Amino acid sequence: MVKPKRPSASSPDKPPRSAAPRQTLSREAWVAAARKVLEKRGIAEVKIDRLARRFRVTRGSFYFHFSSLKDLHDELLQEWRRANCAPFRALRATAEIDGYTLFSTIVHVWVDEDPFSPQLDLAVRDWARTSRALDKEVAEIDDLRISLLERAFRAMGYSADESIVRARITYFHQIGQYAISFKEDPAQRKRYQPLFGQVLLGPLVEEPGARKEPAASDAGS
Image (cartoon, rainbow, N blue to C red):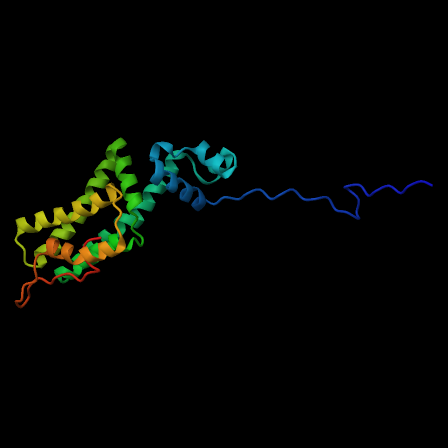
């Protein structure tokens, strides 16, 4: 007796297995991956081949979305401008507001980290060491942030010179915390916050129009 043959792979009774669909990457996915590398390892490590290996795709997938590595770099800088520069530029355009309110708003841009990113800010600052144009742009945003703080202190009644010094101390304190990746127990941090407010803004003055002492959640980070 002859055994019946098993259906072949092409038999209509058993359709052939379809190949696994190829991974489709968006431009946003490439940028997100590149941003992680930038923040952890620096711009020198943002390379097409390394990103392609991470995604297990060819270089062609990258060039489907980007014209060059510089195109990707430019998009990373746009991320930084949107998250870390635009909030301060928006404050520059605001009408005159109470100095304490302006100070508190500036501090919350940093503390809330939405959309501000300390890691991205430090990575771009380091990147600027290799680019004269970017170094100039970073210096300009530093000047803007400090000038906003200075404006807040002036509005709180400080002299021009004291406003400059207090603005610099506040800004250098904030950037310094990011630079050394300072970590602190949340309870300890909360206990110190009123003292940060007193040091940065000065003591409470019981006079009409006097400076306000910051709330515990507003000053410092």
